[in-house]
Length: 173
Image (cartoon, rainbow, N blue to C red; front, side):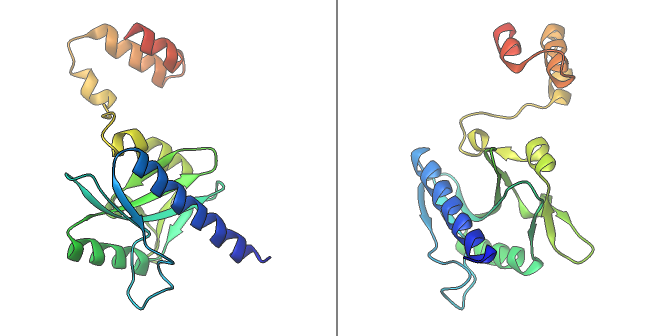
């Protein structure tokens, strides 16, 4: 088996995984069969909606190397999403990590016109799965800094700086 066939199988498996977790979160969801190769039209990998928000999603996964998308892939996703009335999202998953979501405009663009997501970027800046499906809401340290509760800010700073485990912070907060 060639590396390309193996990578395609892994990509298919990851797309099915994304469909399943979105379904479990209450979304109506479908995977476009053999997106990119089964039709002349460029289709997103996954379509999902919960009655309030509708998404056209291009899903990519990697063992740890940066994930690249061609400019054509992103343009096709944006075109489809606009015509379908959905929000375009790029979903990335690195081995042993959860899914992270990005608007295509938030991705780093290379000099060659490709789009790139590094693992560190996904973990630091991506929208994690619970936030994407509406189970949690991200609060930044800057937002908390305006909070009059000084102790809360200090606890969050301690977590950020690695002085306190997240579990301990949750107990305190």
